[in-house]
Length: 632
Ligand SMILES: Cc1ncc(COP(=O)(O)O)c(C=O)c1O
Image (cartoon, rainbow, N blue to C red; front, side, top):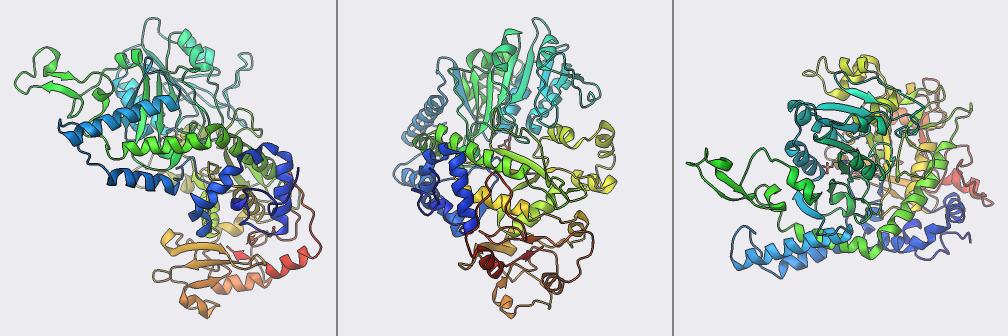
């Protein structure tokens, strides 16, 4: 049944972005995605555990960058610490033993969460997913003729393993992914090689071809992400058994997958799994894990030893058999120095929090939101009919996660650089992420960079940052804007992002490009919040560091507020902004970017999206009155 959010149970989180357009869009959304109502508990949690988001007027859409913690996680962790005496687990005293026990209990809880049998898997604590990947890379027994096979679509920390493989004489092969879906082609007859073979490496067009290249009886490692942190594509988990049957060990990078998807290790049996816990539940940072099958662990050969991972060593007997040290058996032999022992129990608290909600509930929710957003963005058009958004990844929700990566295009079809988009988003309190997302292969495919483009970008590596250099050589867009949903996401969040995207209608890139770069440092802009019932907004700046010049239109700004969001993050000085607001000449081909107030919609257009809300009588007038365009 379609209802407005005012009537909806548990819709506290959606109630913030008010206004008839938003309410009508929400009603249409709930009708189109009835499963969303089964996740209403998360709206309640948004209003309690994650209340800081709405209190600060923040639209957080960077869950693939980092998850958000519930305040109860902090409270429970602190309470636990306050009640016990815990010491370094490498000692034998009572606080140390207590700590060792709690670490063991957390390992067991992690296995339980992923339905992994302790008879099959071990948990190695690492600083993050990257730490887990490095452990595999440095210790995997690559030798001459062995193989490292990986998808083009991979995080840098998986790509980086190729340096270990290369140093040991192993061959490196990349599996192609094909735009626009960014999936690995699975039809062996359709040899879709959209990108060239990286120099010195092999490029294969589909998985089975890559697997055939494994060295019989050798050490062959196949690495891929369960979910792309760039495109949101979920690569098939069926590949795991397929690769193992062909004699490969499988490294599944689950960092972007596990925050909103069930990874059941009683069904899937990858040899190595990398993840970071902060991506799942926000707190604590600095702890990740390598989940590893016992035989795969036994295969690893660590290149060094250190405090914490040995039982005994000698200086004088360093030439003795075994190089003068004994490694601690099992997981501890892979944990260097002292682990973050006080933080580790917070992992159990975080997992309990997720279990109490239900990972399937989280999944359902984010996929409903992603489905709506994908459709809504794809329907956005400029007045001349050209699409406003270019999507990198599947347009449907099947076999993908709630990571939506796009570039905005202007009416002439020119892409607007994602960093610029991110800056505009910052100015209105929307947190996206721009760039390549540490996934260079996906970016190269998505944006059509050639090997020559990429080689050129390394010529002057010392003088320029990578991103700057791409800008300098050809002005090509350097990345894409990523919006990723998570457990605290609401419909209001995705609606607000859609509104933001729609505000680029008929805006020429040239106009945006001329904007002076001004600081968007968070300390300069502390709040973008709904101001009044009519939907106006205030952008509130902390001023000591802020220099709007002496042309502020609003004397009140000196007191710390700039009505309408002029200046601070915009890059336009107030005089320009005022001229433009009054309809003055805007240089370039398009119009100045006007961001609607929350609950409003972009100037002069009905909201385009899967849901076309019916405007209530008088709504247009009140929009007109209430709109406070933020000129950027
Ligand atoms: C798919 C994927 N793998 C690995 C990582 C690396 O995670 P971390 O930076 O926590 O080591 C990330 C981080 O975003 C990721 O998305």
